[in-house]
Length: 518
Image 1 (cartoon, helix red, strand yellow):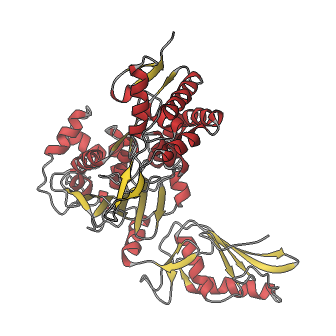
Image 2: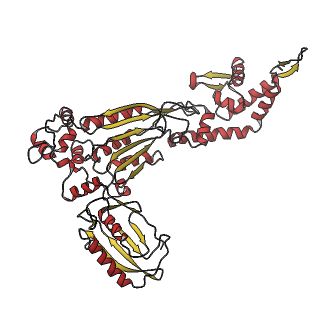
Image 3: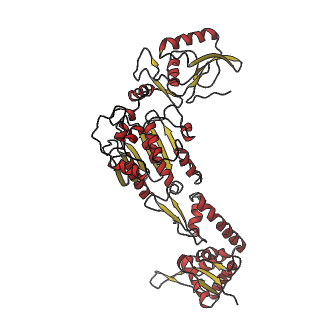
């Protein structure tokens, strides 16, 4: 068995005092296992006096860690690759923070896991652990500011059919047992001091700013203003697939994903510190960044629907108002929205912050697109442009599927025509201007007229192409069939219209040419 260090696995060569830090980190998080007798490269090292080392480890943990972890730790011998090692299993504790007795409740004594690493916990994190252990949260504490108004919150409650009276406010935790407003009341009040900052940029380096907004006041107002701002910045790309009369509209971001991202940011924010929550829309993503990493659960757990209870009353309030449909489903709904787009959002968490990135459905694949510009192949129905986009994997899945049969039929038609397009190109080159010397020694261009034989060949190619495609073709298809440019193709088409060989139908992009029946 090959073991690799991770968030829940630690490898140690021998019993040392540093193991105490790892045990503390596992107890402060979601538990883990320490394999003693394996080096950093995964090589198993036989422990000679395994009973003595197990006893020494047990005494070390009892003497060094506070509160006691004796009920959380199991130390046992394990045979691996024919050699004896020590497996120390640690459960998540309920008396956090666990710390080194010699250091106390300071960052040098309290540890947590960050991926495969054991790292110190800052003072804010220590304070949060203490409050959670004591059953105290920011939202339930007495609010220092009691002169609060709730104009926006009252409108929100009314819109959702919930009375804004004292009994309801007490039941929701907005008014505490002492009859005063709690910090939850502060968050929904017009005086809420925790703003939400939003900005949109035309590039990924975040240097070319398009617009910004500071959402302030009640968190209900912040959520609505942020959603409105991002929806205005949410570009709509219209794909006119060649050969199809209908268009396919693709928003840069699913609106449901934007809404869930905003709500997740507001509901799970760490409000104990006044650090701005940021939402930034760049060329290829929207990134939601807020203070407060995941506690007690992994990123995978959060995506699967498990939730942490940083602000349980705030979360319940949004659920009661029917602003969120179900508890713990926000990230799942976001990932479901992107499944159809064959893209995956990014979720990341460390001790202090939580990051959620939503990829842009259009620009993530297409490097020529930005929020305000298109510097590459257009989306307006030109076959060559769509072929280039398709070759580069730049089309959204829905558009690529719509274009696929058109491309197949087009390539079949070209294959049937054989060398005809090349012949036309050669004949056109033969009619190109020829340089001749003037009497003064200069150069002069003279044209060989475009004679009847090449024109006749071009008409034959178009008629053959049309007969293989139901008797109808577009100008773009004619260009491909002839291997000529727009002007040369139109010259052939207009001549065939004049002599009644083909008939023009439709207007603008819907224009098609039909072979006339005798």
